[in-house]
Structures are given as C-alpha cells and as structure tokens.
Length: 349
Image 1 (cartoon, one colour):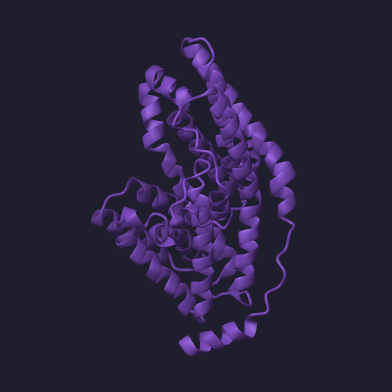
Image 2: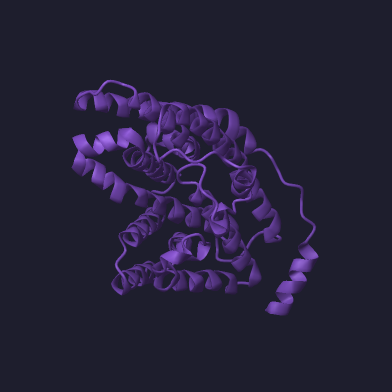
C-alpha cells in the first residue's frame, strides 16, 4: 500500500523536525534564525502523530475485521504478538537513549537531556506503562508506543466481545464517545480512550470504503467528523478526519494499492518506526556537538540541520536492518484461552 507508506514517511519526518525545533541549543538557534518556521514546527508538526493513529486503525480493521467481524480465534495471542512487535525495538531504542543521555550530559547542560535513568523507570517503559504510572520519559515521543499498544488491545477486545455486527458497532460507539467527550479532556491523554476517536476514524474509513458499499457511509463519516469539529474545533481532529477520508477515497477508487509509485516514500515508510524510535538519541548527541561549535550564520545552521537529518535517517536504517526487521519474525507461544474467552463472551452477549 504505497499511499500508507507515503503517509508514514511524511509523518515520521515531521515528528523528527518537531523534536529538532523543540529541543536543545540547535532548536533555540533555529528559533532565532528562522522564527516562523520554528514556531510552525513546534506548534503543528507534532500533530503528524494523528496520521499514525488513523493509519493504525485502518490497518487494524483490515487485518482483524475486514468485513466488520472479528476473524481471529481470540484476541489474547494477537495482543501478545503486538506487544512483542512493539516492545523489542522500543526497549533497544530507550536503552540507546539512556546511553546517549549519559554521554550528552557530559558535554551539555540542557533540560532536553533526561535525568539519569533508574531501573524501575526503564521497566515501566518496557511494560509500556510509563504514561499511566507517571514515569519520566527516557526519550521523546515514547508515549505514542504505549498508546498504540493500548489502542490495538482495546480494538481487538471490542471486536471479539460481540458477534457480527456487534463488535464493529462497539468500536464505532466508542469512537463517537472519544470524539465528543474523551478527546476533549486532556487529563486522559495517557489512555487509549483519548485517542480512540482518530483510531476509530481509521477503522471506519476501511469499513465504509468496502467495494460495493453505498457512498452514504463515507458521507456519514464526514458528517460525524464535522459534527465533532463543531462541538470543539481541534486541528488534530481535522487532520485525522482528512487522512481517514483520503484513505477511504483511495481504496474506493482503487488507488490504495497503486499510488503513489515513489520508491523514496516506500523506503522512508518502511523505516518510519525505526526513525521514530532512534532520532532523539541522535539529536541529543548532535546538540552536544553543536553547543561546542563556534557561532555561525544561517547557512552553518542549515548544515547542522542537514547533519541531524542524515544522522537520524542513517541510524533508522541501521536500526531497521539489525533490530526491527529481525524482530518481525519472532512469535509468542500460542495462548490456550479459547474456551474461557468463548464462555465469557457467551455470558456477556
């Protein structure tokens, strides 16, 4: 799906640029030399995470319930595999961030450098509970990995709770609750409920764009999104709705699997998760070097920005090749919970 590759590539690069403009002396220098660009990156580039959320819901619906009905035997093995898929590269990345923070701390005194890590803090990250436990982050953007896991687990459980069409209806009901209530309360931003609106829009985009399905469903998706924006305008929600409609329209028109045919977007989409995980340790080290370099003009600053970008991409390529890609083939042992889960589902429904 080259369109999804392109969206992931663009989103990962915007997240990198946001952190580049936000952290360290390099970010401060960008704010002085290019104030308007820096302000835009700080205020708006971070919303690219909404792209990942919508794409995540779209792909989850495609794999778990392509026709609105849960197609797997039970959710627990899927959730366990998802955890392993996320946490192996994540654990390596935060370990690299701990090392990079210790090195940068020798050369640079800046609030961007996390405090020295503790074992309990590292374990909270590895269990993906750092957000809900209030543990200080060991790297930038790590909250998203925990939220992604929460969203997938909640999505799988909702689908499995009900037989067709109840599972999909439960997902859509929670999507509405998130759009109109949970997502309006920033105190919930460590929980999947806050982000489920964007994730559910992605799932709804898959279901509404099925071949032969009435265009009415796409219109209903648009109306729900617009109503949520009228209730409380949120630029991040506008972006999520736009991406969901783009995915739905591309699938309906037959473009999802054929457009755009760009090798560069396919490449950057493939390594997007690795770049997302390792770019912050690279930024820490480059900021430490930049702090000890002579003051330069705008051209010199752009050179440092280019070096930061190249370092993040090269680190992401290596991380994908030696860490993320080998971990894709690992499997969790099968969980023997089918009978108990079916009994619980029969009692509830």
